[in-house]
Length: 302
View 1: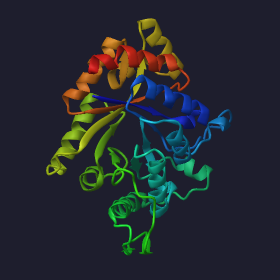
View 2: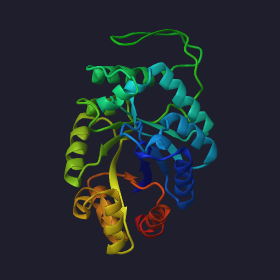
View 3: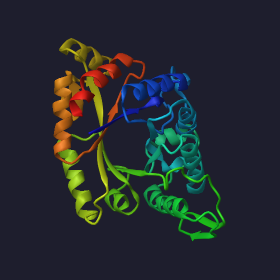
View 4: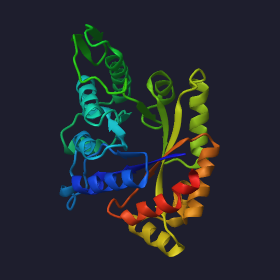
């Protein structure tokens, strides 16, 4: 099982906090550091946490060396497809080829309203067209002329962008971002992710995608889960309380408990075909939580 760290900085985490966690995750042996693509909307107390996903990842690309970096997930409504292709490719160059793009159709209408970002009712259809454009641009020879006359986007000319370091950028499609996620995963993605799903829910999503993408034997299946691990029950309870979550709920739908319990939960996801897991850490300043997982959980998965 490939284990990555996933964070939601819109809850109030500065760039510095994200940098410290990313560097710690890298030094402790996690394979990836991923973050949400959201902006804070709660009133008061979150101004220091206002960071942009791809600006943050550009900084981390220069201040880390081995850990993979990406979004879970970029909101397609935030960026035009041609500009997003350039941004992601540039960060990929800056990281020497360590970037992956998790992308979804866009969610949270209040967030869009707060920052004046259009929230179109046909965003799922726009997302599908955007994925197709990204796929084409990243596979287009550098000196080619390209024309796209779509429903929502028109491109014409000779697009130029930073050449991705290790071939086209790996794309991750999430299970709940669009009704046609399975089709899009089959057509464009390297990875299909079941977000915050129980084992039963993830199994159902995986089975559906496998049926649609039956011709793909290279598609990675992954899950994103909330993580709450402690060396004893008191530590687990304390961390769950800090998250504002119920321990039993976390055990039922995430990775929670002592290290041995966490390993057992991870193996249940592995049994249904998940080969990669994104552990969502609520408190990004709790480096002891990260160290506990790294020292007491990861070795049992080798």
